[in-house]
Image 1 (cartoon, rainbow, N blue to C red):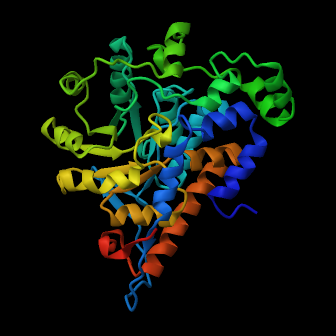
Image 2: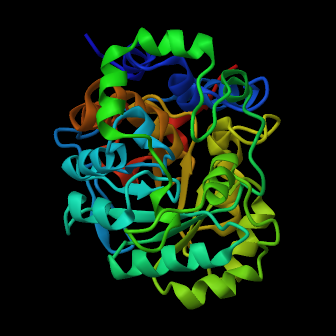
Image 3: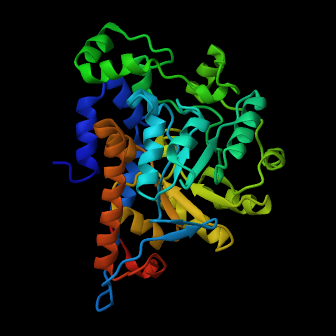
Length: 380
């Protein structure tokens, strides 16, 4: 019986080949940042308030003029097609089923046009952007996302270079994957995954090619896997991006309050506090620890979102109490995808929403706006 995200993780670990699970689950260096993301959330406690009317619970929030069923969404996830063929499509559909937003990664294995069509016209679909040295790739991705009516553009800023992900290095993980003898033996122990992979074909970064009938170069694919992005990207570069995109523009990966203030000065519409799930700088603080200073820096002028380390609906409530507008999750949704495709991913999202409703009821908050700092108690 799958009762929580940890249960889905355990099953995903059994169902996926080791190199795939490690790619999803692993972090940078000693993975201390991964541990801090979860540990710092655990050290925050919810302080119940009673004798309040909680006969009905309203989890909905409005973001950029659209109503979300709950302050929860799916973060951008690269290489979903490695977990399941058409994984990006299935993930977008799962989020749409649950009435929640989905952020498609530049490193997706399904083209952004196909994902948008599959999710449906009413889906809360955003586009995440990496900027590589060849900026023409970013330009055509933005133009295509605009043509497909994506609701927001999310520029990831915390990957000037990829973090040292030692699990991937030990597994010899690369694209195209050339398994070692040990990895091949492990693959043979996962026949269902192998059968799906053989039918679906080797995943590639299809959005790097502007046109569907062309393939991105092997060099561009390798650069994307290594997350070797344009290190010249600076605050001044946002003017170039604004000329391409006139919708809501968010920055993902900020942890420093001064960067948040800079974002305001450059007309950014929203922030996602994130350490990339602990996959970049192992010495970085947890996202939840950095959240309050970023919120204080921008006040209520733009919405602040957060990701990294969220495994329970009660974790979402903690972030809301610290001023977050909503929480994005990555690994939990992928665990669900691994276990049951579209239905599995949706089940995890529904689970988190249900846990959030329960936490709100038990803390005396009948609606999201009623969650505040007075609901938090810091432990040790």
